[in-house]
Structures are given as C-alpha cells and as structure tokens.
Image 1 (cartoon, helix red, strand yellow):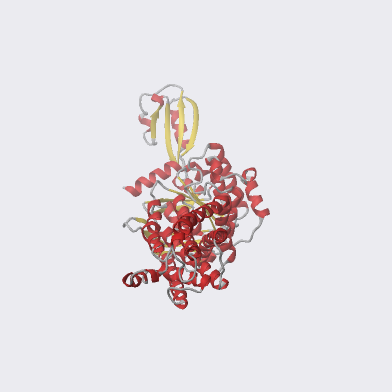
Image 2: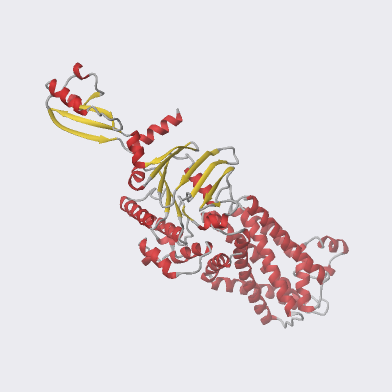
Length: 309
Length: 253
C-alpha cells in the first residue's frame, strides 16, 4: 500500500532568507504514529505548517492520500486534522460552535451525534456551552483536538500536544492517541519530550536545523543505538579498576563502591559472563547487579550534538 | 464551490452579530435620529427644497449610504482581521476551501449585517419624514450592491492590516471624506462648476446618486454610469482579493 503521506525533498526558505527546511524526504504509513523530535527552531512546526497549507513550500512536494497538497489541496486537506501548538481559540465563542465551525469548514454536513461522541471522548461534553475563554489551559487544548477530529481526518498532526500540560492530562493525551491509532488514524506529533516519543510512537524522526537526521522504528532505534550499562555493586570498595580487568570497558562509580560496565546490546557477545568470571577470579565480591538501557533522550542529545558539530 | 463551508463561515460570523443584536439595532437608530434632529430639523428648516424634494427626505439616501458604507467596511475588516489577530486564521488556511468560499462566507455575513442596519435606518427615517420610493427594486439592488462591494473593500483592509491602528486608518482617512464629500447631504449641482468636476472622481458620488435616483428619480449622474461604477468597483475588489489569496500576501508565508 502506498504511504498515506509522502514528503519529497521539501524545502522552505522564509522571506528573510531563513532556511527552515533544507530538503526533507519522508514517507509515513497509514495508521502509524510518528514522533518528530527536535529542539526549538529545528523546523518541526514549519514542516507541519507546510504540509497543512499554512505556509507555502519553496520547493519539493507533499502528497496526502495520493493528493498533492498544492495542486489538489481540497482532497489533500480534507484528510488532515491539525492541532496547532499555540492555543488559538476565539474567546467568546462556545465550545460547540467552534467545533461545529471546523466540521463545516472541512465540508462535512452537520452531524451533532458525531460531534457529541468526540466531545464526550475528550471529556468536553459538559463544557459544550461554555465560552472557550472560561476553560482551563488543558481544556482549551482538548477543544483544539476536538476541532481537529471534527471532520474525521485520516491524518492527524499534533504540534507539541503536551507542552505546558500537567502529568495527568499528558497521560490522557497519550490514551487519546492510542485510541486514534486503534481507529486507524495516522498520527504525526512533534515533541520536546523524549519520554512522549518513547511512550507512544511507532517510529521516531529526529529533526534539527531543517534536516531530518534520521527516521527509524523506535525499538530498532533504541536497540541499534542503545548501549546498556551493567552496574555491579561491590562488597568492598575499590580504589581503582584492577589491572586484571583492563580488557573490559569499566569505570568506577559511587566512590569505588560500584563498577559500571558499558556494552553494546547488538553484539553477539556482551562479555558479561566473561566479566563476572573475571571478577570472581580476582576475588571481588558482589552485592548486587543491575542493568540500564540508555534512553531515547541520550540518543537524541547525541544526534543533535553530532549534527551541530 | 462548497456551500457547506460557506454556510459554516457565514453562520459563525452571524452568531457574533446576533450576540450583540441590541447594540447593532440601537446604535443606527440613535445616530439616524441625531442626524435628523441636526440636519433635518435644525438646518433643514432653513434650506429650500432640493429639486422638489424636502431637504429632510433628500438626505435619507445619503444617510443610509453613509452608514452602510462605514458599517460594511468595519464589519468585514474586523471579521477577517480578528482571526488573524488571535491566531485562529490557521484553521481557514488549512481548510479545504477556496478563496471564493472564504470571501462568500465573510463578505456575505458582513454585507448581511450592514443591509440590516440600512433597513433599520430607512425605517427610522420614515418616522421623521414622508418617504416614497419610486423604484423599490433599484433601491434594493443599489443597497445590496453597496453592502457587498464595500464589504469586499473592508475584507481587503482586514487582510492588509497589521494592527488595529491600520484597521482604522483607511476608513478614517479615505472613506469618511469620500462619503461626506460624495453628496450625502447635498446635490452635486449645488457646488461651483470646478468642484462639480472634482467630485466626479469620487466613486461614492455614483453610489449615492444612483441610490437617490431609486428614491426620487433624481440623479447627479446617469443611472447607467452609477451601475457601471459600482460593478467595476466590485470587480476590482474581487480581483485584489483573488490576487491576495493566490500569492498569499500577508496571509501565508
């Protein structure tokens, strides 16, 4: 099946000469959740805005469901729902009216039952007659999501959906995304929070300086780039790493009370067995051992540093 | 053209109007009454009939035009500037709608509001003076065309404006003088010949003249020319809006 979203060498240079996108190419499959990670000013929002029609591409092309977003903007945009980063809502309008407006704008006929379902799912039903200015920040964000979902989009863009949102609401948001995935909606979200990508994404893209540094399956990415650390707590503290253990990548931690062994998970032999027998051979007693996988965050920071270098 | 989208915008814009219906109704009633007290009664009693029409009645078409033009511009410019100001414009830009649908929705709503106000003024005026409308159909046609064309102009101003000051600038600096000097309160023939010629460069003259013709059968310029002028103005505004949406000027980066 053809990808639902195809981005082909997309470039965007703003009037002032700032190159926000320097040729992004990316295919997104139907039903997947892609998290775009990147620092501020990396080009995440420009990428979304260019796909959705808010900014015009300088060159390159985007198709949604096979429709070109410029030449066939009607068909392409009908498939897209957008939740912007900023909370942009008309303050004096009711939740119901503002959601109804979006549905109409996208050419869908009035369907109160469908809107009710969306509002209930987002716990907004009892607020439907409230003016948006009376809502809390988290509720406003839900209204934006309700608007984006009001016309049953096939592709949903969430631009930093959990920025400035409390922990509980963030968990809620993740549940909503999981629900959408179950319904077959393709979700592209941008985030600063690595844990967010780790928690909900199928694939992770890292963008910086207008370039897509990598896009990869989340677990594969973590396995490929993930290093693991084995922490060995010792019975007796050591002053230095014993000479007999020099062949292992060991560092002392906790003032000599622990040894940290870093190894690569993708290699056939991790060297753990050899290390443990070497330790016992050297007469070093163990109190406890634990392992830790490096997080996406570390991978991400490493990549962004690399690209800046 | 997708009517669902046009209707969605139109309906949304009209709810704002209905929320403030009382204000929308009272303010033209009061201002028209004031005009009649000042111009109709205080000044008008000292002015002779103008070409067989009492001065009080003579100024009615001009008064309606004055308010309708100002209201059309402010309604339409605010209608599209406000989403730009608060950021909800993103929705319009990312929706599968063409510029014609957006214009039809916004301008349609703005024109409806000013049409309503025009009718309210006409009703209020008829309480002060005896009015007979010779060509009711032409009167309605001129009123509607004026509402639409100046709402289009207001829409352009709203797209162009970068702040609230600019939103006020064009109506204040250009439109108010044009409307006041467009023969709202006098017949062009009352002016010295030189100024009569100058006045012919004022587009509003054609509107008021045509509108007054619909009421009394009197016109400063031939009715055909009035119609051509207003149609040309409408087409010009539409052309400018088409260009703005095509190039994304002040709309899309």
